[in-house]
Length: 344
Image (cartoon, one colour):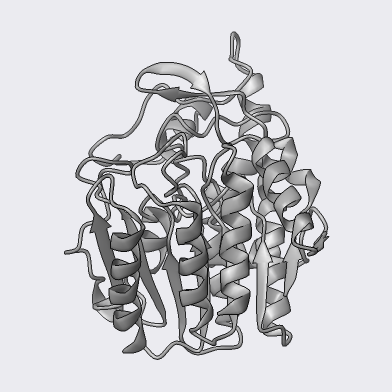
């Protein structure tokens, strides 16, 4: 199995985000990658660098899942923000078009409010370079599977599954899992995304909701009481050509590994009817009981069981790192998943 990561991703390094109305230390910091990379090395595996910029086709591939104006916004907003008198060092919106805006503004403040869904996505001077490098790792992993590798892993930070067609949220800017699925579609007619992150992958759902060629399934803490709040219900099943290809299985807060594995079995039974030719796993490790954003109560051993079950799908598979934040158990959780996945 090939594994990909570039240290250029560390250029996106916000120190704080807004939590319950107060500035708090951001758990989505370069330390995440350090802990995950150390766990990979201890398994005797090696991370390869895809190059910070990705391939010449990366922008075109991103435009299949994100709007061009959103990509332009991410690339230019910090410089334009700094041109405003009295601007903050980080791009952070102070207005949002709640209920839906009627037109797209030219002003940087308005555009920040349009594209940055919440206060967990501050943008610094080098953020876009790091964000693009994260996407490049996802691209490299998907391309390696298209080239004949049966499995590949991308250590992506920032993560991506909350990023919609033109919206950042929940630490996510570019949807790495959707990008990997888009690349797999270049070779395979039917691709599935199985999201096992603590949080619902609302951005992924939005991207593929009306498409029948990419199946999306998510296990997550019940969004009636948990982020991202406004998506993730079991009644959200797709629309148009995508009717029936979006499956959400929300779990009660505090659910343990047994409940998670039972729900995963149900999710994969639903997946079987789709007959996918390749799979993307949106791999969150934040369902662990000690995660700083904890909403579920998995143990480290449960990630080995989750990995083994997904490994038994026996399909070309791209693993995309989503959530999982610094704790003593973070590296062990990834190691357990990868051991189970490779054994499965």
